[in-house]
Length: 429
Image (cartoon, rainbow, N blue to C red; front, side):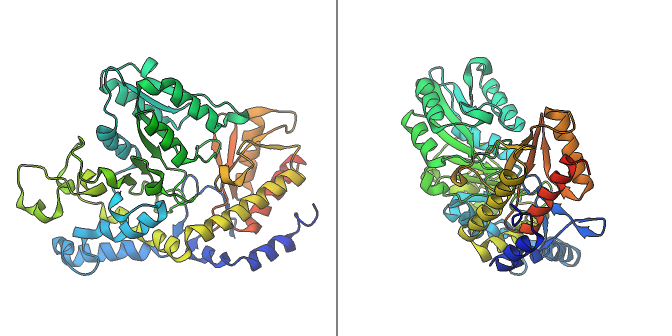
């Protein structure tokens, strides 16, 4: 225990880490003239140093070339979204034509559901997890209502069957089996936002397809966090944001995936000019001819200024590779878990799965006790104390503190600072 709490031990782990220099590629927020211990990458990732140059390049081209920026140079705006396509495909385990950077997460979810949620009287239902991120539930409930069905019976929320709000694969399989004849679509998270539990996308897809449903995923907390293999999973569609672990900035352009088997289908969609095939788009014809693959789901021009920071971040993922980042993530999160178990077991309860394969970088924590208070009051007291010490995690109602050591920029020293701050709070410092 003494070694775990040693500054020398944490510094030694950082010095020996082969990816330790990645931190230099990011701007670290300051607290009282010192670098903050920032564990909020599952809400907003830090700014890559290179992001500003990409944004400035767009601004300079706008200033000097105006509309001609669409057609000038290697980064011309006409095909700007394609600049991120290869790296994005690699990041999510897809073919390049299966992914596109567009819109925002919930907008993409709605647009994809136009084609992949096709309810009938016999199959009206969407299946999702209970306790989902509110935006997902709002979107899915509104989709059910839009099609004239009743969310009370046709939005099926699977309840967790394990302690702390976790789901077993058996519970998911049982729900799909029980409701299979009525299921039109399954929408499930890659990583559950509150608990940090990661799911087997391929297994859920197989179960859903066997039941006759289309299957899609919200990967907001999974992309850039855990290895993904969307193409091989067989999922029909997926949507995600890029402002969390992918570090593309607040409100960043989002991503979408449409499996290659749907590339040339005539699935319904809310069509827009930019989804028209590129070869004839500027002929301004009245008939919509969708571009093959995910690009055919676009509506409008790509948001150039929003894509620019994404280029900087994806370059870091390309440079490092998800296997190496995942290995570093498991080491950092494992160190956090070890510190909690060894020094804070009387104070913090980990609700995230203990098996590394069932989680990403995040550990979700509840406070067991503190200064005579329990539950939410104690948790909020600890959270505010951490902020005062320059240790920033994330609070989720009613009583969860999320601490996420992001492998691109967090360090063992950061993790130790968190543990030391919790000890100070517990001991009344």
